[in-house]
Structure formats: structure tokens, C-alpha cells
Length: 196
Image 1: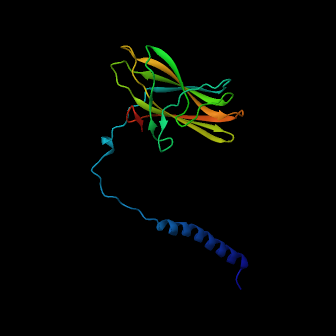
Image 2: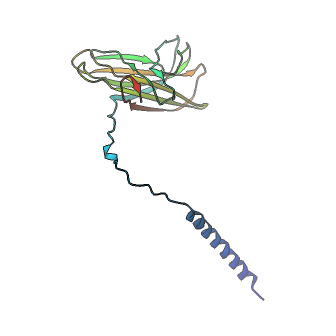
Image 3: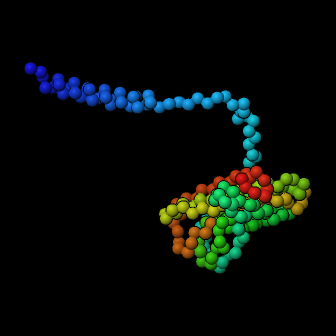
């Protein structure tokens, strides 16, 4: 007569072996595709230069009256990916400009907005303007709100570079929101008239 304890040990060992062997069999069915060699190399891809933009502070603000800030360009057919830029105004040494996202309607009075500050270096009048976009994601307890702006640095009026303080306002509605976080991305565009 067989020992029931030994039988249970044998069954337990068999179950463990099945658990170990089955994943190996499943992973053995995975195929690997080999692609032919390409004549192009990653070193041949020229990366776009970094945009002349520094991300600054952000704050939740409430407008007493309707601010009427212009749209930061025109949104294209792929939201958040393409659009027509707006050229920042020429400055002598320093100036400030305010915008709402490209796809946003005018911000209403008494609405709350997330304000993000950027410092933009505008090249001298003999320099070259640069196109860039800014993407702002505001994480609220109720979900995400996004705003995108498309810009060109334009050129400074003088022989030296100027600095623009750029303010972007993302409308968050009339009710006081709880902001959990703000994510900001700045990309260089391929031209000064359209992004990407």
C-alpha cells in the first residue's frame, strides 16, 4: 500500500513542474522577425535645435473681467500636433505678451485659469526667427484640461536679442478647481509659419 503523504508530495511536485514548464512553452511560441539592413543610420538624422524658450512659474488665477487675450495660433486638423503659428511682437529689449490656447474660445469673466510663464529669447533683427509650440496639461480632480499654443519668436527691433515674457492661460471654467499638477512641453517647429 502506498503512503498517502508521498502521493500528495508527488502530485504537488507535478503541479509545480507544470507551472514552470507551461510559461516556457508559451514563450517558445513567440516569433522574432528579422528586418533587412538599412542604408540609413541614425547619425544622419539632424535633430532640431532646442527652442529658445525657458519654462517659468505657473499659478491658478481668477479673472475679474474678460481678458480678451488672442489665440496662440490656429489649431490644425490634428489636435496638439499641428497648427499655424502666431509671431510674437518685436521688442526693443523686453516685453510681455498674453495668449490663450490656439483652439480655445475667449476666456470669460470670473473664470479660473492656469497661467504658465515662459521666457522667450527673440533674436536680433539680423538673426533668424524660430518656430515653437507649447503644450500645457492641467491635471484636475475632475480630469485633464489641455492647451496648445503655436508661436514664432519673430525678430527684435534692435541689433541685440530681446526677452519676451510669454503668458499662456488655460481656461478651467467658472468653478474653483483643484489642481493636482501641471505638465508643460516645448517643441521646436520645422518652420516659423506652421508646426510641426
